[in-house]
Amino acid sequence: MKHTELPWKIEYDNADERGGGQWYNIGPTTVWFPYGAPQEEKDRAVANAAFIVRACNSHYELLEACKKVLEISHDPAVERILIETIRKMVLL
Image 1 (cartoon, rainbow, N blue to C red):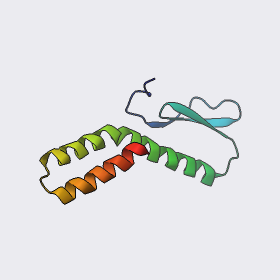
Image 2 (cartoon, rainbow, N blue to C red):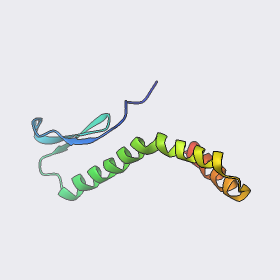
Image 3 (cartoon, one colour):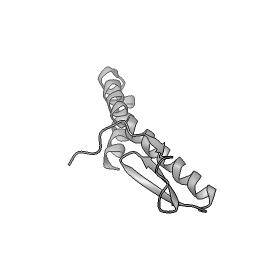
């Protein structure tokens, strides 16, 4: 199964305030907050979502950049560090 098409984004759906709460469209999912939820809870959830969205949207470009550095690097130490870093990223 393929993931939801990129780019992901965060949107507050102002027109969709039903069920006693507010809806946020975050990437491929929707998050609902009940009215009266602490603002700190909403802010943290939206900040976490923004972090996830940014990571997902930059994932493929980051991998390409790593591959290009490996292609042009002629320093074994740099290659070893990059390979170890890429392996860690892939295993996450």
